[in-house]
Image (cartoon, rainbow over all chains, first blue to last red; front, top):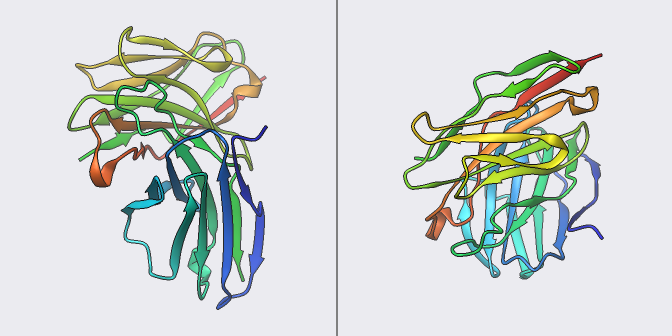
Amino acid sequence: DTAVSQTPKYLVTQMGNDKSIKCEQNLGHDTMYWYKQDSKKFLKIMFSYNNKELIINETVPNRFSPKSPDKAHLNLHINSLELGDSAVYFCASSQRGGVSRNTEAFFGQGTRLTVV
Amino acid sequence: AQSVAQPEDQVNVAEGNPLTVKCTYSVSGNPYLFWYVQYPNRGLQFLLKYITGDNLVKGSYGFEAEFNKSQTSFHLKKPSALVSDSALYFCAVRDMHDRGSTLGRLYFGRGTQLTVWP
């Protein structure tokens, strides 16, 4: 069973379009994330949700809007796509931590977004 | 502020030789430390972590890492490299007492490309 799954795996679209990437985790984690990996492979956090509540929003343009219908899902909607949005987007999940030793994050396979 | 440094963009090693991928960190509190591996066109796979206890932690695929608090380092090691170990390796840190806007956040290094040649 896939722990963190995101769809689609590849997404090619024209500038100006609106697109969504979906993410689901079946690990029972309470926190989910979106990371962006640029062409130099640098990973940067975009958003984090804990129990459906937004807790991290890292200077991401308003065109990016995360939505968490429940704590197992965190979708990413992008409006008016630009060339610079081309990257690989990773969804991840983890447990909050504290007394828990299960602190590692689990990542999806990534969505390679190409804006043309 | 939390940060991770991987000083080497690339590490090349011959198969059968030991390998080391370096990582140093900076965190305001006590750290949780992680290594992830990314194979081409794949997601990040968890390798190992340091939470507390023994400074030497063992992980998947024969990898291990040593936590050194005085040097704020968490270098990844393997006694005998395999060609199949060739991949991009990321070190990451999380503040043990993260809360609020930093809750659960991982800070990643820039990655080190490991190439093992036959």
